[in-house]
Image 1 (cartoon, rainbow, N blue to C red):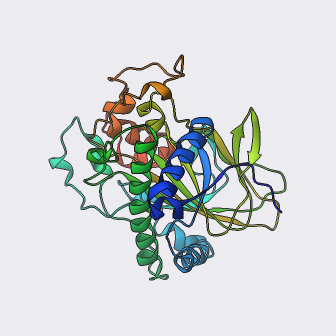
Image 2: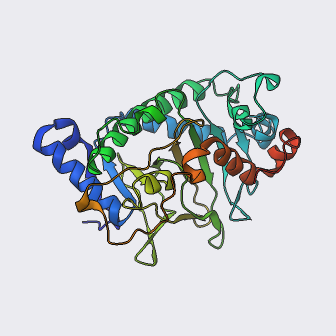
Length: 336
C-alpha cells in the first residue's frame, strides 16, 4: 500500500451531516493547524469532467507555438491567456512551465470609469481562448464554476473548525470573488529545474488537480516531501489570507514544483480562490481552546493582506508577468 506524505480527508463525511460532519470539521482544523495541505476525496466533482478538462488542456499545449501565441497573455490587460515557457516569474526566477490563465468572465470596465485608487479593477474582463479547440472554454469554465462552489462550502467548514458561524467569510466572496485558474504543462528536463519556485499562496484556498506524474513538493518538518498524485482527489492548501484571518492557527505552507525527467510531461489544473478584491477580511476572535500561547504572526486589523486585497492581487500579477505590466500598466505609479 502506497504511503502518502499528506493527510487524506473524505468530503463525503461533511455531506453526511451529524457526527460524521462534525468529525470532518475537527479533522480539517487539526490537519491545517499542523500543515496547510491535504488530499480531498469524494469532493463531488465528476471524474469524467476532470479527465476531459485535463485532456483538452493537453490538446491545447500540443498546438504549434504560433497558435498558442495567438492568445499570449501580453495581449490581455486582464492577465488572461497563454504564457510560454520561462515567461512567468516566481521569486525573481523564471518558471520552467507553460500555462493558460483564465478567470471568471466578468464584464470589463472601461478604463476611464475605473477610479484611480482602484486600479485592480482593470483585471476584470474576458478570457482568451484558442479557436481551434472550441470545447476547451465551456469545459474549463464549468470546472471553474464547480470548484468555486466547492471552495465556498469548504470555507464554511473552515469557519466552523475555528469556532465561528459557517457564514463568517461569506460577505467577502458573495459577489464576484477573485478566482484565478491555470492549466499548466511542465515539460521534462535533463536535470530538475524550478517548475514553480518555493512560495505560499496568498488567497483563501487552492485546489489542485494533478495528472499521474509527481512534481509538487511541500515543506513538512523542514524537509521537502512529494505530494504524489492520487486519482480522484484534489490537493487542497490554504493561503496566507486564511492563515492571518485565523490568527495564525491555520498554516499556509511553503511549496514548490520541480520539473519531471526527460520525455515525461506533467499536466495540472490549479484553482485559487481569494475574496472580492474590494473586501475587508475579518480578523477572527478564536475560542480560548484554539488560542496558542504565542501567535506566529503579528495581529494588526489594518494589515494590507486584510484591507488591500485588490492592490496585493494586482501587485502579484504585475510581479509575475512583467511583460503585461509594461504593455498595459506603465501609466500606474509604482504600487508601494
